[in-house]
Image (spheres, rainbow, N blue to C red):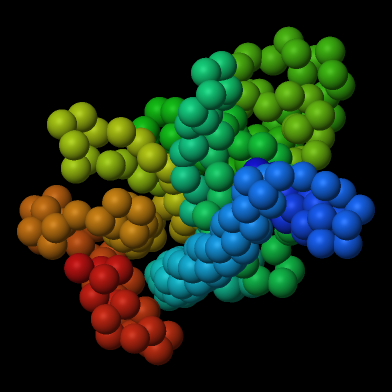
Length: 288
């Protein structure tokens, strides 16, 4: 919206300056030399501004596309690593990364913005829900700063077909921060979901900055929470943190213990990236 306002504003100013100069040249409008000079300068400035805005827009679009390509490589590697670790069908899995966004304006609530998602064609489409800390599995993961794993389908089945009044009387833990309308919209869309927090520990105080979510078939939560799967998710979460806020290689090595589940997951992730044909420099950047 902001970009649209800028573009329209520049176009209107350029049109006004052109019309006034045209009227002055045609003798239909008489004004001082100073005003004419100002209009000429304004036209030149607007021409430069439009060119600069277009150049910056192209640069940002190229950066976003490059970033999206890296995310796509990483999340596909996660998906196929989970397939290898569990034997589940890739068409029954989806992986998504979310970033915590805190609006600059006071009074505006924090939101979880989806950075990227990979899924097979038969997975359900995005729900359209505005996720936030405390809302749903991913919201709880971000709010609590810990791994959250829930068989959503089983939880919905246990609740039964509740109405709006009964929904309002349920404990907060059962409602998971969702309104009744959101619950009805999401019902049946998800099976088992595992969410791993993205923690920025480069500063003096650690802070949750997003999460990585894996969802799969109902009834498969035990397989989706096997150590090999959690290790891959933890290693991928660290790679995502490096993409958003790069750290020094030494800091990355110090934070990842040799022989830990995350280190094993990092090796599996590296092998999967190589298998997918990802360039060596990108593999190194993602896995350290």
